[in-house]
Length: 436
Image 1 (tube, helix red, strand yellow):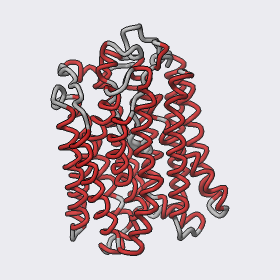
Image 2: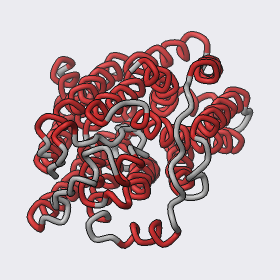
Image 3: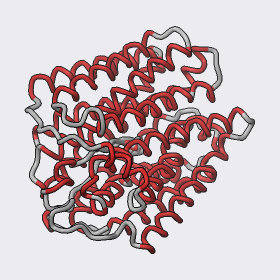
């Protein structure tokens, strides 16, 4: 697990960068003399670039030594942050976020795959949760501190700090990360086939909808709280959301390894996210309850992608790498779409306090689709002993090529797993048979 900690260090920096801009939007908008809705497109640029770079890992870079690619990707990410700190205009700022997002997407995908390869199969869930925990810790510790630094020294100082952290992570990984075995090339027909796979597409669609709702709404958390409850100090609530992310990302790995009923877990998490978002505007004037809702939302957003990617390994072990890369792309594409839609809604005159209700409606669509998956059993077909769970075959080779959150989802981004990115895949544990 010590080797995985090195990868978690880079994930910490990604987690900070992927989500800190949401807290900086009002400051950046004032500095560049633009609107919050336009400044929000900085998040769109980063997450869209992140999403498009993930398939590159499964396609063009498959077979290349992962250690080298990890270091180069982290260097590109750090360069993008340095350019962000120096950019004098909104146009150049958008370009710099594209560069940073591309590096982040490749690093996130390869770091989760490397974490999977560096540990035995029965510890894979914990290893991947550790990498995701690094990203969520970057959110819970780094984002509020980054916002505080921006309030004292300007938002460019926060981006300079990110650049410095990236350089430290590069030095640590270059010195201490051991060689990681490369995956065999993935044939083009396999990559194309995953796009139309009726077992893969619905699961990926749920990830996309969840990211639109969770990571997209998080982008505009500051204006939402200001509109709904006249909240001017957003930092404590960023802490609440991030703490929830840490709790969710740490708890979900062992839970999936032991319980295995990932379809039920996905339904439960979606209900929690949607419920918290529906209540957000009405709780905005009650600090304690608002913080609790944000903890629940953050925990769900960061936890969701682990069982999601487990489902993909269970139903398509032979396409594990490509299916997980598609899921990672859907996560950050959803974040980009959510950020763009939120900006359009604000530009059209919609009150920011209405955004959580729209986000909850999107979560509802994802919940309906997940219930349909459970009913038809398309995502619940058990894998055989050579599939995703026993450490052999394609699923063992693929490990995980997800990010998050997101973060995220996170990745991503949750987030989410984020959200954000970004979250990784979890092997079926020692049982040998994953249950979706």
